[in-house]
Amino acid sequence: MNIGVFLGSIREGRTGIDVATWVMQQRQARADGHTYHLIDLVEQDLNPNTAAPPKGVKDGAYADEKTRAWAKLIDGFDAFIFVTAEYNASVPGPMKDAFDLLYAEWTGKPVALVGYGSDGASTSRSHWSDILNHVGMKLVSTQAGFSFKEHFPEATFTPGDEDTARVNAIADALTAAV
Image (cartoon, rainbow, N blue to C red; front, side):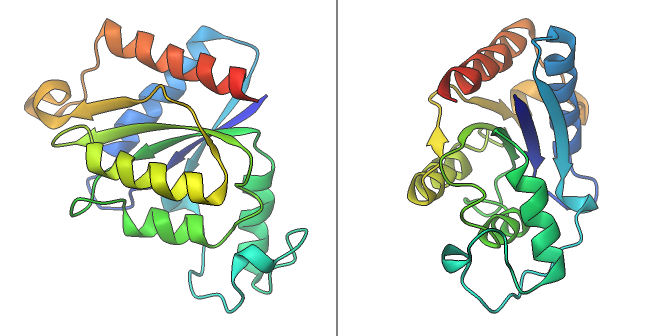
């Protein structure tokens, strides 16, 4: 199974890269036979101003070349782990813009949420839950939330053994949902 770890924060000095890198390291160390790939939104060249609503696009035939490349990348994954921050009590705007460029490429695929922020991005994860369900993704119930107070002492991401167990449970839930 090919699983994308989608990091949606693009802010300078973002802590999400540390969380996403750690998730990737945990997945690779487990050597569970699945392939994990970091999809870092900073590395994507997207144009969020496309003309056609993505729900009506068939077979990745988007008008915008950048959107076609994005669709091909996302369509190549069987499942996703969304690593999300919380921006102003909701999902990160750039991540949502990238998500909204596509529709069919997300539909029907399992997804798990890993949030980080003042309260583990609980509001963002809740909003993502609504969004993902609407698009028809299979949201697994196992999630992780990393709070700044508990998991970022002195501004350094410091997960514990129980966090590793939770991320392993996320991977198990994703693979069971396919």
